[in-house]
Length: 213
Image 1 (cartoon, rainbow, N blue to C red):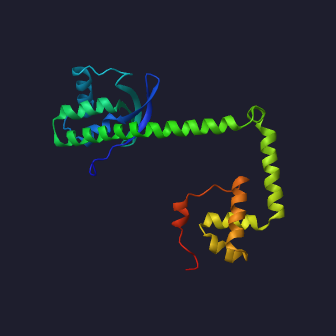
Image 2: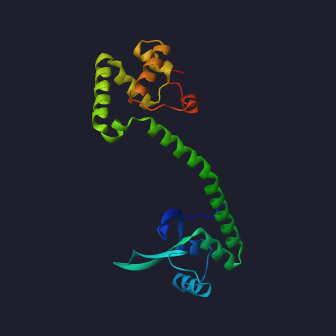
């Protein structure tokens, strides 16, 4: 659906998080000639869509000339959006409906990955001793002290932080610091463990452009 563009966002329906879209945007996308307020009211009435099940209502301020007026908005679920698309019986409606179906399929495919990530984080949390979780301040102070001590004993660490932010490769950093590539890599690994730096993915490092090429 390259030529159709509509924004989805997370909202609450009956206190449950769900993907929603603005019905006014869908009305414009489908190029409906009936005025929006009449179109949405008629669809809700004729097909018995239910508030807090299929949609929620709200208001926004719309600028009209020198004045701002309240405009009623309808945030609808993807299921309701698919039904509205079918009711239009148009090519745009069919394309939009297929798009929403793909979005739902993609969201469902992400669930196992998100579940695995949550389990991974829970496992990492369980590895943290109870006394640290209950009173993290002393532990955080120890980390800060270790970082300060490392910066004091390794003045070039600040330069490495700056070079990493610039996107320099290990070879480039080694030339600027007058060190070997292996020693720079060792320092970076140590600084990652101390929390100075975040670990970069392999493909991200490979995509860096050499400064001295």
